[in-house]
Image (cartoon, rainbow, N blue to C red; front, top):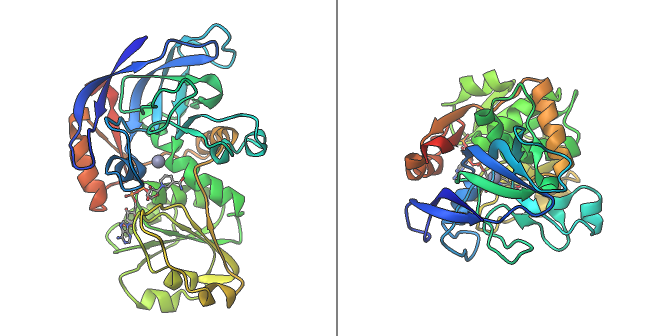
Length: 346
Ligand code: NAP
Ligand code: ZN
């Protein structure tokens, strides 16, 4: 058994503390990863605060994991010691259901095993990447391209794939107008990726304070959603809207921005239900959809896409002692644009 150093939280209102957690001995297909960097996703905050439902504490969040392979199980074929690898939001799935067989393991009919706050096939609670080591079956490990630094790679494992997958699925590309609502961790990746796919990108942010950054990330247009004129001006404009906002929004106002047959995809996951007036959908045959991360094959494809297009997140590297402060800043929309924990400070 391996003892890893970690940062854990003991309850919804508690702050992080140093902890030690156990990682299993390597099974035949397991890979031991020495974690170098872990991103802070807003989902970590929703979960740590118990907003999505009851959590078994102590909890070690973290599903944007980048590190180096330091040991492999006897039958591992995909990775060797020294490889640069990543782990995202899931560490296992049944592998047999129709969705797993399609490579959409995130939609496993038996439920994927989340990287933290889940239970693995050995019956043990899973603990995430705010830790020095993790053991993962090789099929849920991805390879980080050589031209992407490990600190910048970490957020691609959730923020990158969660935005790449719906942009890919709904055909963002030349001739398509894409709006991104909320320019935080996911939102800024959506802007970069949609731009690289060839779409015309518009950011819809609460204020214009991050406009210069948005244009630099590849947006052509940038509007403030606190200005009601924005909704009149942009009515019927977008083929695809990716909503990354972590809080409840007036969805009908955003549906009004879609073209005929346009789709709004929610990736933001606020705890509260969103309300919909169906007339704002049926009037122009609009769709309201959701999307969750992406499969392992698509995650590897996203990494290659980012490598080819030189896309990396804009990150702020912090020490393990700054996690609570980072959570506060994310909640205040004061993140530019992803906090990444330097695990060597643990
Ligand atoms: P984040 O960095 O906090 O970004 C969210 C952005 O939404 C903020 O930066 C802000 O952008 C905007 N926002 C926040 N509160 C708002 C409010 N009350 N009204 C309007 N806009 C608001 O969070 P993230 O890590 O990108 O995650 C975003 C959401 O996606 C979270 O709910 C997370 O759990 C979810 N998520 C889902 C998946 C999935 O698979 N579907 C995966 C990862 C994360 P502006 O300052 O530009 O307005
Ligand atoms: Zn995430």
